[in-house]
Image 1 (tube, rainbow, N blue to C red):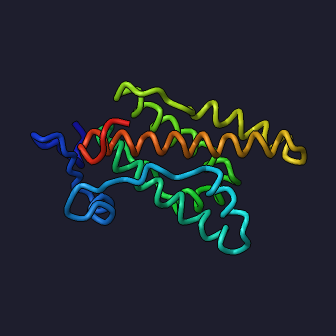
Image 2: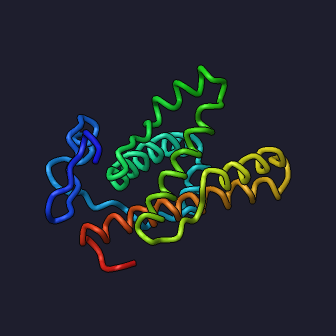
Length: 171
């Protein structure tokens, strides 16, 4: 068991670090599990609003991952820390961060007998070939598919967490 959380008799996970108190509040939080990848993609195309949403959404999703996956004792770094390290590493760290984040979610799903949708290695392949072919329709499609798979997996992680905490019926 990790140092910064404990599991109560009813199965509720209680984290005791500053980050979790800020996100979690006093009670167990129901996590959103019905985001649509295509909707998010289309919103991100709107000038200015899309950029703001592209910053806010990963911040929220990382917090949700840290809440759902608290039992593993790890902590996924937030968006701003990743952004800063991305500048220092010339864009390499955010790619590595995304792979670790996806592997953490995939491992969470496997621990709870669910099928993972996207691992870090699979995402990297989609991303690499999508960027390589970014000036073609195939490259754009690869990037959109990777994004939609990522959102689907994150939704599944949140739905599993909600199910474990008896917030929703089995999904």
